[in-house]
Amino acid sequence: MSEDKYILAIDQGTTSSRAIIFDHAGQIVSVGQKEHEQIFPKAGWVEHDANEIWDNVREVVGQALSRAELNRHRIAAIGITNQRETTVVWNKETGEPVHNAIVWQDTRTQRIVDELAQGDNDRYKAKVGLPLATYFCGPKVKWILDNVEGARADAEAGKLLMGTMDTWVLWNMTGGINGGVHVTDVTNASRTLLMDLETLAWDEQICRDMTIPASMLPEIRSSAEVYGTGRSQGMLMDIPIAGILGDQQAATFGQACFEKGMAKNTYGTGCFMLMNTGEEIVPSKNGLLTTVCYKIGDQPAVYALEGSIAVAGSLVQWLRDNLHMFDSAPDVEELAATVPDNGGAYFVPAFSGLFAPYWRSDARGALVGLTRFVNRGHIARAVLESTAYQTREVLEAMEADSGVKLAELKVDGGMTANETLMKFQAEQVGVPVVRPKVAETTALGAAYAAGIAVGFWGGEQDVIDNWAEDKRWEPSGEQVERERLFRNWKKAVTKTFDWVDEDVQE
Image (cartoon, rainbow, N blue to C red; front, side):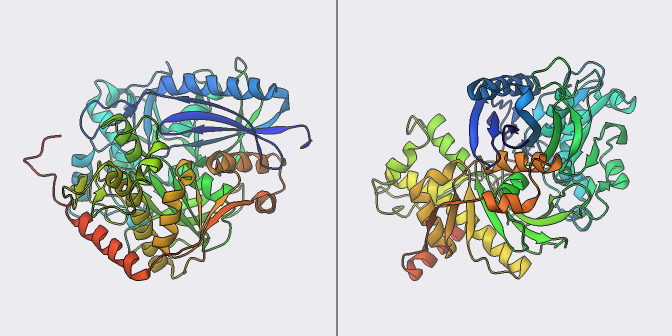
């Protein structure tokens, strides 16, 4: 079966949707990709058009199939991975969203978060593993119900559904208003602020606190099982959809981080480091999140510690799109290479506050240490370095929480193509940085989950066997200089605190 069949992964990301077809060796056969619009209605607000995303998903699936010259009969199963926390609410009778999807970076729910916190942002943390923050889904749903005319009445009448983007894509793929399956997996559910980490069920009291009717919530299932099949009028009719993992958990799975203490860092729009903590729920004392790593069928859930960094690759995009410093994102490396160091400049990209390990929603971006000496090259270097410093902060928090010293850091995502960054990253974390041959580990992880569910792969060992190293960067450089740079970064971070107050209009 596996010789002539393939797995299709749908990767619904923050900036684009992709469909990638993988063979049994975990190699890429073909890719379809299409970007969607980033909508910024106000400062701090970020939205996506959920209908546009569903259109794009269908288009990229068509691209991937045609480029591989395959039809649906050659696809053994479909896996879905997605930008987590991005939330959409839609009418189950019409299939229409009641509002644009509110994206994970969006900060409009700060007032709701403050009201729910009652002075304690960790109010629910023991149960859900997360602090109260604008990042997560629950407050986004409440905002939509509170602010969209007629939404709350429709929700209470049982007409509305909510979900992260995996749920939206799955519901549409399995028929939408004609019998669409309303399901999410444990990894996405663990990012809502609404799921109890121990029971893996929605917490009724928290739902009541956030005034979210239980009828809106999808059923929580494992990360690898058959949820439903492709709709009769679609390109993937009758093909089992059998894997769902939030993007960072999917990358952890694709990187074969199956043992306790193994970790990976994904460099995308943001930066996300996950460390497998096994079947143990490890509460964080150092500003990290406790989350579900994966759950394969009936097997016990595996948990993880996560450090989420809001801005990484998107800072490079900002230099390109807002400041027009270069035409293409990879050009940042060339610009950074024109100078030997950062010239004393540090860029703290707190565009929507600071995520791990600070969780400061009052912070805003700052470029500090500027003198007449600093030029475009120094700023480009400061941009790359900011990602490496933020990763080091998260890694140190992770080691402190877990008591495990990391032996190496597995990396993936678009920014790993940047040699300057990877070299500097190894210097800052003081352990080897390792990139796999298949850098699309997010889509690969979703493919593996789906393939394991239908017997295309036997289990985790196949993932381990397929994983292969592409490149490794060893730490080098003077320790004294490394620590000096990091101290200055820490100092730069403090300059971003307390910016948002009653005088700041966003």
